[in-house]
Length: 210
Ligand SMILES: CC(C)(COP(=O)(O)OP(=O)(O)OC[C@H]1O[C@@H](n2cnc3c(N)ncnc32)[C@H](O)[C@@H]1OP(=O)(O)O)[C@@H](O)C(=O)NCCC(=O)NCCS
Image (cartoon, protein in one colour):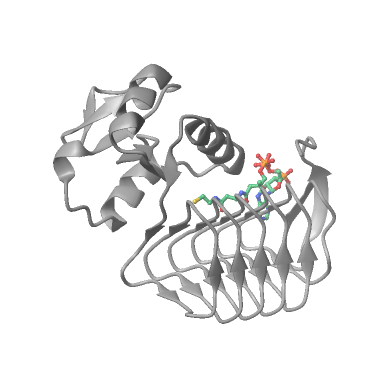
């Protein structure tokens, strides 16, 4: 089993895992220059060759990065290496039986995923965030700690909802959007927008990447 990442979010993901065979456990980070050789006594793989060889022994991997585009990049790479994306779901998260869950999710402690929701592949729902009934969360979106997506909303792929932000019911937030921490979104938001404040206002646009 490999956790992708060896920094802050990877540490948090590590804590929500319950692994039966810790001897075969690794972190992977091929971009950071400032890493030790191990984290929590488990080796850090630093090259794609090492990761590829480990995936041949055990194809399971878990995302441990926060940024949607970084998550997607390594997810796709590991799929090419015949890896198998596994979800990390905290024991104390509440996930409805009627939620449709994609692959490779991070659902962190105290998160709430309500009824008839659809959660795309690679989504991160961070600690204390809540996704209410009938919401659809696009692939690799990042729902930050304490954010609330109220009922019947649609959040686009690769969008980040900042910590403690609130998306009011029945709204559509586009792709590659950044919602600032603490914002309250009261209207639909177009693709690539960066939004802050209460009520949320667009201050600029992200470079379109998808
Ligand atoms: C919205 C955000 C993306 C803007 O980041 P940025 O592009 O680097 O913008 P800056 O920090 O240069 O701020 C631009 C202006 O917006 C203000 N601002 C930034 N974030 C704000 C926020 N969340 N709410 C209100 N105002 C905010 C700044 O004070 C600054 O104002 P000024 O021009 O009057 O000085 C960022 O501040 C943010 O809120 N990110 C979410 C972080 C988060 O929740 N992370 C979770 C990790 S688990």
